[in-house]
Image (cartoon, rainbow, N blue to C red; front, side, top):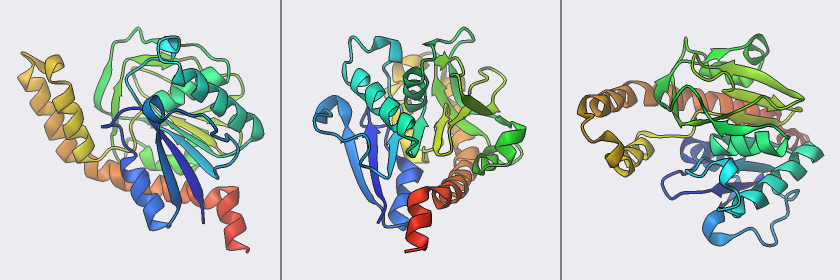
Length: 242
């Protein structure tokens, strides 16, 4: 049985479609709310897969949110060991920082809504090809970005921010976009962001319409990607040959 640890930073930033796929595989999943539960005693090398989700703090706020420092150290150990890792939004920015790259406020403004991704040539040879703009748009909700870490490969970009999907080694991936979201998760976010949308009713209505249009295709793309990627992980190959 696959053993998965999931770091969650906010109540509304759950694993969504990723957890659905893991449940279908009968994986043993442990969700850790790192800001509340803490990470004392967590063994970075124990899980077969570590997933780190998104959240509001910036990586550069780690002095104010010390659990981020713990996560960076854990991620660094896993990446050094070549163990499977999947980052989403903040989880990808933490990955970049663990690899020595700069994480900072983007100079192109916030990227909020449904955006096209352009998959690189290398990306087209990997499971992330499922997110090509010819198939779906991807949900974005971020204002921070990062430099491509040394030793990482770029698998996808958007027009506004180039670092959208990155790979490190054979079994570590980071997504700037929120490939995990479901319509329910987006609805929660829109309520939490009510202050942002004061006087912007048309923008809010457009985002809801885009969610109705693109959530289904993206969830299908996430399932296609995630299942194909999981099948390539060492723990899955070992299970098949047991």
